[in-house]
Image 1 (cartoon, one colour):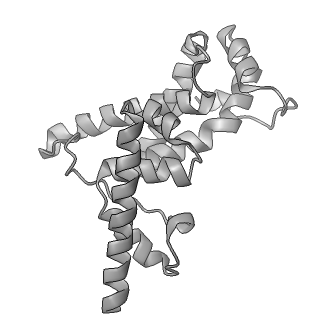
Image 2 (cartoon, helix red, strand yellow):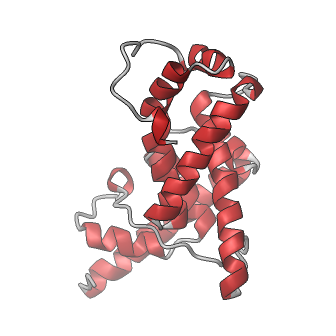
Length: 197
């Protein structure tokens, strides 16, 4: 995949859709620009889900190779970023399933928690200590963590998140509501005790 990571392209204004059309005809320069534009977001999303940089890097490469092979399958029914993160989500779920066979966890159980290391600065409701936010984020269920990450760090709306995670938009709203309530309760509890660790 490293063949796609090169010097900055001289076509920064090309649309994602036009790049995908060119990638479909095996244009490596278009793939280079596409990778520069979206590789970081795919990696960050995978890392938040898997909590393992090596696995996230592998997922990122797999996603970009799938774009290289299947760019012509993008139908335009969603934003390109939504399509990419949907591919990343499927690959991350497959990785979690594969790894869970070795440790006995049920990766799709709502109680299966994947601890994330993110500060959630935009949603911290006045709390100023990042350590407290990290601690409270780690207490959220995986599905709630994903919704919070996609909303606040990827800037996606509920319909796009629903598309990526293949759940109804109402479920996204419910998960966000529960996540916010749990974060607020957790922060109140920690601040009330004066605990930071």
